[in-house]
Length: 159
Image (cartoon, rainbow, N blue to C red):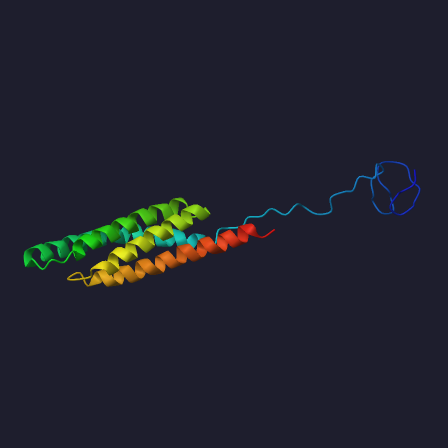
């Protein structure tokens, strides 16, 4: 038998000169590459989710206190209520952010909850001055999730 690759005559299954198989089937020279690509900011999204779930309970506590002060002072402010809504958005955003941190849709959903929470926070700060801080942090969380979703979508569209 004559090797189709180098022209050496041989007997058997493989060419003794170049190692080509007798049936002219190409041999694999390297192992296949397995992609283990992670979602952008995957660990960061998990950390933000955990932090926002934990802090949402602190924000609820502060909101109750602010709501009590608003009621006693009869000042017409609803900063305690806005804090409750922001806290609820953080709780839901944190749960979705952790559970769906690998999916693009889940990333955008969590970012949306953080953005809505920021809107609630900026609506009426009133007596609850910490609400401004929580609204700014909520805006930062929303930006991280939305930018991550955009980057993941671009990464997925590349051939």
